[in-house]
Image (tube, rainbow, N blue to C red):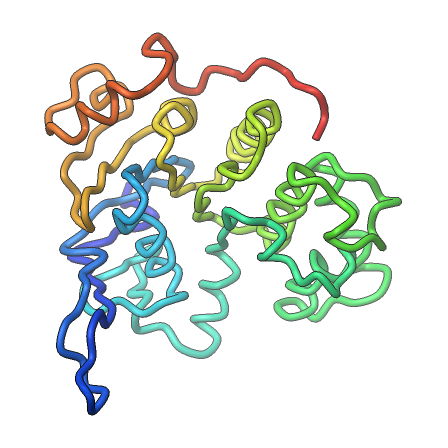
Length: 275
């Protein structure tokens, strides 16, 4: 079976210096000749230190920023060439969960409207039918119906991330980019959110790109791992291969810093207090 996502030769740079006339004289390369695949129902972990280019790759894959070069195939379609209805369909099938849930939600929108907005845009739903769908998905991620008319400021960080996950799931996507989705949360709440992502993947056959600088989280969640250093892929392989027998010096240094070397991929986290 062909992969759901196939990325080849992805490259992106940003202006670093300009002359007196505003012309760019120097550029910073944040991703250079990056290639990988993601299978249906698979989690690909992308790891590396801050500034390695991980988040930029996730945004390029979803066309939130345009690559300078490279090919992005999603279910056989060239994402960089999509326009109009085809691009809208891709947006529905491919979603993103951001690191900071508060900044990704409109502070002036109730949760009812924040989660329901994609249903109105893509399916034209309104009123009771939209509310029914919103309640269903919020309940699935552990939120209550009586919280629908509250604003983001009235929730904890863990609750906000659940709401952000609900918003990403509203359109029943096939693929989600998870950009450091638990980095801002307490450890006990991280466990709940990670377990929720695993459960949703099993239920819906979701494919994830899981971006993180924390290898212990990637080991818990990912099937395969891409290691990035200064915008380039330095090693890739299954989670077992990378953690049990890392080849690149940078990967070895990352693995040696993982607190618990006996951890096993996809182990269920210890239940914690509800977020």
